[in-house]
Image 1 (tube, rainbow, N blue to C red):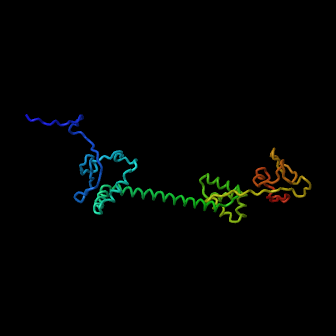
Image 2 (cartoon, rainbow, N blue to C red):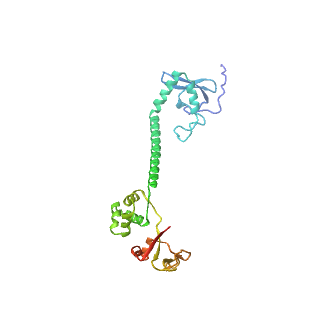
Image 3 (tube, one colour):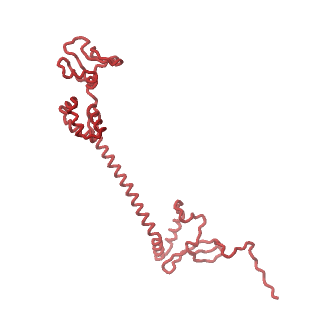
Length: 266
């Protein structure tokens, strides 16, 4: 009986059908049939094999399809592409573009779309800012009572025409429209572009023919009572009044009375 040499059997046996990973290194790329590019892998025990991409697992590489991971191996792939002969490189690039053409086209379209949205928004904001500046520069100054008329009719969802017709019911407004230069134009611009309220004119009211310290209309600051006293304004008495203040206190008639002297003050 011939003696047979014993074979060293591994202590761990792998059943048929077990999925395994064989360690090796990609050493080159090979073009097959002028169409496909495959990896040439040198295994740790020396043998070289041709392995397609889907048969290779790179240690530490993120799972395919995980878009949140950085493409850490792009530089390596590009370096390998540069090492290929020109013809092989063209074949590989054609294969890549054929595989990812739809994804690439969509990505470029999306990039252009987002860039267009960004640039459109930027231009839109610039136009809005320019229009805002234009309107602010064009804002007119109007008296407080004109501003109140404009705001009232805007609050009623009325029109500029309605605001101008208020002159038929408001004597002060009618006089201002008749005497103020470009008054109708100012109301229209204030309605469209906004306005600034000009500081109201203030008046010193004196009774003609009265001498001494009792000729000037005063208002006591604390009690708000009116009296005729000294013409100089001080901590107790106010002698410079707006037209509105005078009219609300019942002294609107002083502007039409020949016995009263009205002096406009700063």
